[in-house]
Length: 63
Image 1 (tube, rainbow, N blue to C red):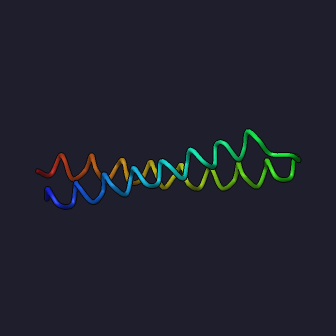
Image 2 (image 1 turned 90 degrees about the horizontal axis):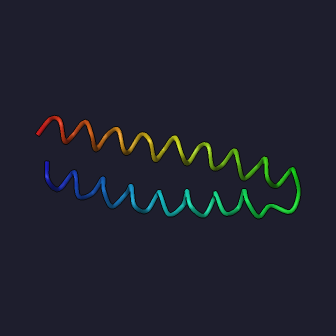
């Protein structure tokens, strides 16, 4: 279980970095079309981060 938590935590860290970059992309978009595209990618990535966070909580509770 401990290895699983370590792996999930590292994955979460990596995915949060991607999320931060996407947030930057939204904020610095040159056109509305680019902003909408970046925002959609941000939303998908945010769901991924939330899912990993929920997985970590689930594993912690199962310990």
